[in-house]
Amino acid sequence: MGAYYPQRNFDNDSKNAPNLKYPALSNIVFYSKSGPLHREPKIFIRTSREQQLRIISNFYANYLKSIIGSLNYDEIIPVPAKLEYSFNSVEIISKEFSNIFNIPMNLSRINRTSDYEKEYSINCDNNDLEQIRILLIDDIITDGKTKEKICFRLNEKGCNDIDMITLARTDHNIYEYDG
Image (cartoon, rainbow, N blue to C red; front, top):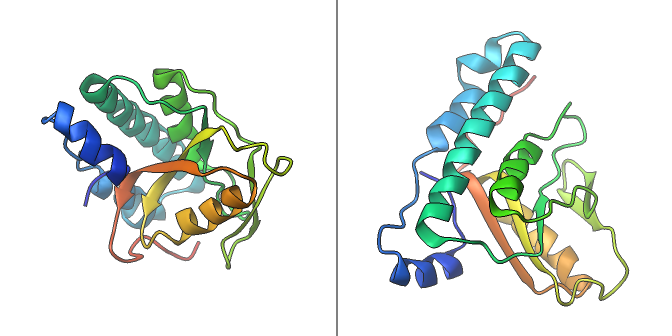
């Protein structure tokens, strides 16, 4: 487990930067969702999670910047959280990447329209995204369904240059909990 960096970029960037590796951040991300922090009062969970995410995403973004230099994207888009969540932790991650790489973050480009089916809508006119390079950011990638569904919607609007970065990856959905 570790962070996820777009494979097509990793293959190319690692030729010029042989020290590029995936940082092992997954356990920290999972720990805050399913470990002891989950059982603490809600405000403590939120404050702790926000602090963790700022530190981890700042570390990861600066690490990537030190190894590969810049990221060439026109927009950073955080994957929208479930509608029932009180805040979108991915916005914190995206803000760190936006600040460090000086790439504008667009919070209104994608809306989540269904929690259980992971359905999304895109806010733009048809073909407005033809020349736009988009970096999607999410906290955890499990099976790639979120990326697949969002990319499908963006492709419908003319965008064909989309990558995704996450702070963690897993082979199964170990972080889900009730509450």
